[in-house]
Length: 362
Ligand code: SAH
Image 1: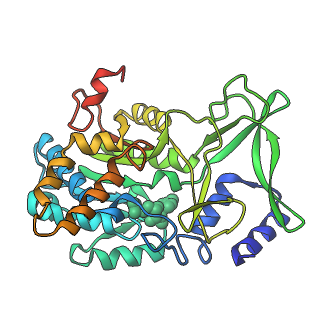
Image 2: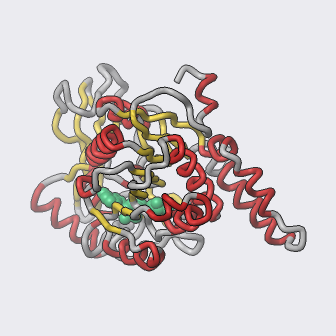
């Protein structure tokens, strides 16, 4: 049993069954034993790999997108660059390197990072040393300026609560500790009007998810963008609703039981993009998309950028480059399950990367 499991058993013994979002947050961010605060391992040699760790082309393409957006908004010189949950700092570093070549004003802008884990803050500080990043733990700390930001695999790591349909009514789903084992249990009845948006009817055992932290962060981000301008790319594996049990744990690149390996495996959920869109609307901002990551990257030119990087004298390098692009773009890999959405101030028009939405009802 991990030390965190031991701690969680004691917490539950003292306070009763635990909300799923609290369990998830303790597993990821417990100040001593959390997965992101102790020895988080991701990258090829770790438990899972994210898009920026696959190829620096990912960051370059997102930086090119920011550059376009920055020009579209009149190229403000007094603005901020931003990343939420920057992990090892790879994406922020690749983007800052690209800005230096293509967008001097974005390169000069201060680099703000929202990061809850002190361990990751250290890594980001080292990766971005020349950019002197400014760390914040709440979005209210952002200066009132246009913000050009990205959140890649960030919202999926924010705790979700679950409701379960049982005997004709919605109940909160909780995590209990029984004889040294963790188990899901059916908690108190959820009343109508609960922020979870419960469908009136369902089948026994159906599950609905909702992230209170996700709501709070999206509200602050949308309000900032609505008032001060800019744009934030939100990239995550996602779905168009809050239905179903989407919690997943990953260890050593393989799915793992979420009630085991506390603090030693990553736990995430599938992001409900409709909820994010509704919050943006409520705050006077606009969430464009989502579109599939593969489609987005192709529409903003990853193919031609890769062609330009090919080197006839380095066939092995070319093969690695094409394999990396295939991982990012191919529907069988990250191209379809991962979605890209863009948070901007309210308005019309469809930026590059999202043109495919014009042929749909969005
Ligand atoms: N974006 C990175 C890493 C994703 S892992 C990549 O693509 O490689 C999720 C990141 O979000 C980690 O850095 C984690 O510490 C951070 N994080 C999780 N919950 C957070 C919260 N509530 N506030 C701020 N950062 C958080």
